[in-house]
Image (cartoon, rainbow, N blue to C red; front, side, top):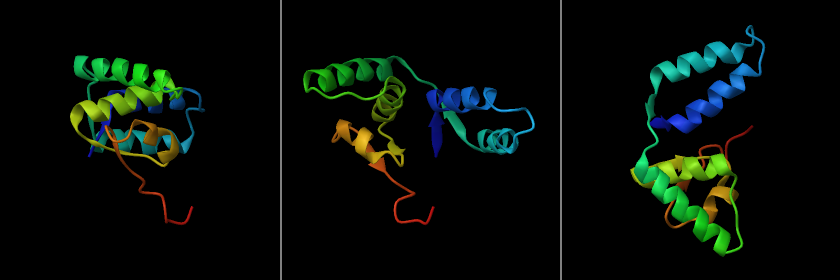
Amino acid sequence: MAISSVVRFELMYGLRRLAEAHPLHGKTALFLGEIETLCWDAQAADICAESRFRLLTAGKSLAEMDLIIAAHAIALGAILVTNNTRHFGRLAPLLTIENWVEGHPQ
């Protein structure tokens, strides 16, 4: 398991919006200390451009950050774990997704 550097950005940005005493600071630090962060690269950028073009010409869209994360997973041949299968599913069959939340009590 690993996360994209883009996901790390989203986590770190989200923390900046919270008070320093918020418990998510410590939990996120522990998580980031245990998981590898993979760098977004030229291959991911090329796949992102192609994917965005394909979506737009098909009359579909995906939020930019989600598209960047998805392109990174495609470039790595990785499975994207998300609870947002409806949106990320727009990139099937190029993108393989799994929902680890589905079927589990919230």
